[in-house]
Every structure is written in C-alpha cells, then in structure tokens.
Length: 498
Image (cartoon, rainbow, N blue to C red):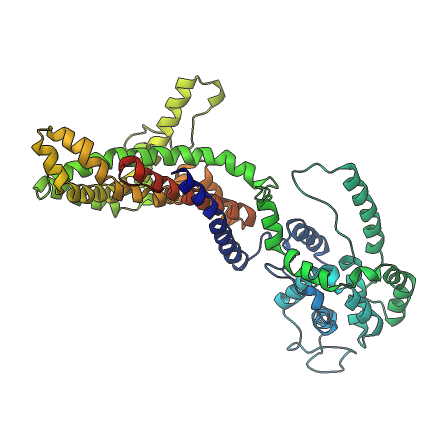
C-alpha cells in the first residue's frame, strides 16, 4: 500500500504540470486582458499619457507584456517595428479635406487608422520592450518620414529603460534597493530625452547626437544576443516560465486586483469552502448509503418507486433555483425569517464563545448545505442500491445467512462493505465538484470562500487568482482520486495494491 501511494504521489507531479499548462494556455489566450480598461479609449498619447504609463507599469510588474509560451522578439525586424510606428504616426497626420487645398503630409479619412488599431500598435511597441531598441535607434536615424523618426526617438525613452526589481509581498535587500535607485536615476534621465509633436528633422538629429547616440554607443552590447542568450530568452522570458518559477516555490503570484499574494488569500478562503463542502459530503453519504440499502431491500415496491421519483426530481432541480427559493421562504420573511440571508458567521464573532460560534456557523450554513447536498442524494443512493443488489445475490451472502447470522449482521458486515465500492469511486470526482458547485452557492449566500473568490476573480480578469483557484481544484481532484483508490482496500480486504 505504501509503495502504491508513493507512486501515485509521484505521478501527480507530471499530471499537475500538464493540467497547469492547459489552464494557463486557455486563460492567457482568452479574449480580454486584466485592467485593459485603464488604457484610454481614443488611443491618443497626449490625452491618456498618464493612463498609458500606469498600464505599462502594471503590465511590466505582472509580466503581462511578455509572450505567453515562447519568446522570439530578439528576431524582430526593422520593417515590423516601422509598420507599427507608422500607424501611430498616421494618427497625428492631418486629414485631407474633401475639397480645397490639401495640407502637406495629409492622409485621407479612409487611410487613417482606427482607434483600435492605434491602441494595438501602441501596446505592441510597449510590449516589445528593449528588444527593439536597436531598430528604434536606426529608424530614428535614417527613416524618410520625419514623423516616424520622431515617434522612434520618443519611444526610445520608454523602451530603453531598465526594469526595477519590484515584487509585491517581498522585502527588498539593501543591494536591490541600491540597484533600483541607480536604475531609477538612469530611467528618469532618459524620460526627458523626448521631442514635441512639432519637432522636425533637425531636432531629431540634435537629440540623437546629444543623447541617444552616446547612450547607444555605451550600451549597444546589451542588445547583442548570442545563441545561448537567444535560447534562454526563447524559453525563460515568457509568462509561462515566470509563472512556473513561482509554482516551484509554491507561490501562485500576486493578485492583479488587491496586490496581495494569491496563495495566502486562497488558504484563508479555503477554510470556508472546505467547511461547507465537508458537511455537504458528510450528509450526502450519511443519508444516501442507508437510503440505498433500504431501497435495495425494498426494490420493486411502490415506496421504493416513490423514493426514486422524489430523488430524481430533486436531482433535476438546479441548486441556484433552490437556493433562491430557500432564501425567499426562510430568510427574507416570506413567510418566515428563521435563517440569516447570508454570510458564514454572525456579527461580533470574536466575542462569541466556542459553542456560540459553532451554533452561529451551523445556522448560517444550514441552507447552503441543503442546496449542495440534495442533488448528490439521487446519484449516490442509486449507486449504493445498484452495488448492494449485485452483492446480496452473491454466494457468500447466502452462505452467511446459512450460518445463521442475523440479517442485520449480513447486511452491515458483509453486504454493505462490498457494496460501497461503486460510491467510493465517485469520491474522487465528488470533492472537486463540490468546490466548483459552491461558486454559485457561495455567491448567492455571500459566503467568503474559494467559490466566491473565483467568481469575483473571473469578473475582474484576475489571472493569477483564477489560476490559483483552478490549480487548487486540480490538487483536490488528484488527492480525491487517491483517497478513493485507497478506500477500496479499506472496505474490501481482498483488494491489494502491492
């Protein structure tokens, strides 16, 4: 048994890795982006410069400016960079009038890029970061369009900046603080090396000669990537590599909403969900197993048919609908107000005694537990009934009766233990399903558990929190399957994993 458990635990590691990869890819390629609303809707840098800078810093801190899986930005060409700069430059060109004399360097309304295209170009240039610094310097020096040269020169003041060591939830060392001070001073100098929108070719040449030329001559080697550098960048300078580096430290990262460590928040909220799911699972089994035994010994009767019909009617009733009805009838005063309308415990919980606290929690969880339990009764009791029907026809059951054992002893000691195997199989899938099912129930009853946290994270596009909740559900599924397998040997000594 011990060797089997160890093998299963080792097998969980690659299984968890594959599942985390699937979740990560689906989540990061889904439409939308965290805090995307912070970008100005008009795409104009001069109007939304502060918002765009805040968004750029936000993406940099959370790695959202990195490629998802593989990084080939070291292979970008000057033509690709020029195309995006030209889109931004076209926004500032005057629109040619339908009639009359056209101003110089104007653009027709049909040729003018849309706001969405301009924003996409701005964000793409930001995300490319310092990989395109040599191209920006070359474009600013030689391109035939003055507006594109000006855009390239101004982008150097952002893309050439070095990154600060800035991790939430971790105290910086004195060396890291000194490094950040040095980098901040250099970045602040570069932020001033920009040009106004009216600057011409002479101003661009002067800026390059005074500032960017000497700077690039001094730091140009920073952008010469060897083969080893390119291989490292390809695999490690990505969102997935950064996320898995955190996972190896048992760290789910930091929430993009409240800037708190996701792991600490999940551990705090997991207690509420486990409490709710434990009682739901406990009552589901404690009711369905005796009910299945009774149904197996009374099969074919009208009472058995009535119980079966009632259970499947409950099974078909959505839990969210039942939750709303229970709240309306028993918590909102229509017709009675016996239970609280939501929450996990009453007010002033810190002043309650242990017994009072337990009573308050039980009173708050009674309705949610009912909503999570009744749906499982039909399936579990039917599995228990089917398993027992197969067992009570077996030869060893007839032998037990022939020995003179009482019927209760035959049922409890021989039949029920072997008939438990079908419903123990469901244990591995039932635990994570209770976690996922509690999303709706926790939202309706305002229970601050993992389900409500997942729901709120999805609405806020908090990628790290969503990943943390889904991976926690994955861990529960894997361990639930292990518990299910081990329980076979507990109820049936004939089963051995050695």
